[in-house]
Length: 277
Image 1: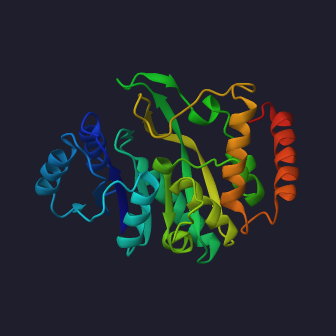
Image 2: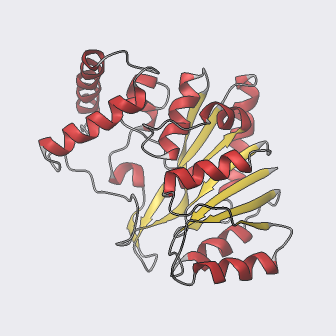
């Protein structure tokens, strides 16, 4: 059984399209667990309507407190609805391809068989779209110059530059177990699950196909940013480096010197492949 975990907050505008796309999945062995984080719009009414219409599939977690934020809300869902064999995160504003779960689940089960009980994450590429679902870019990875083949198998690189997008990932129970509880230094739930998977001897596997329309709008918590080698200031880069170091300290890097040496190596590697981040 697959548990899909969806955290919502003021998502009334796009929420129905996302839930409809989950209901339309060709893979049917799933349950959807939803936790609202204190919406003040019509989100909760929409969720109640869907839960009443699909009581065997959609379950509302009405726990307190509210206002946890995206990462902690997803952590709560994973911790309290983690009795499944497989898990997926869902955002409130995307649209899943009908075969999204089927494609990712086939790959996950195959990789899990090879991994002999170890943590496994698979994740796909995404189509970047605007509010009306018109395409901005056919590949999020190319659009933002994300290099999963370079990053995914290397904990040092993964600690510097996360390649995994939460709404595009599926993972097994072993990955869920090793990811809980999420560190107070964790930046986002997807990056933490990916990093813990690799740090515990598992693997993160990219699927070179798109399975989601990744909607961009002004209320995205995190979204797609077009890559430009000099598109960020030195202060932004320094801030991001500090977040990456704190997240990986003790798991990957022992000290800042080691971290920055590997950050230089990572940057050079990216440049040799045709771009740096």
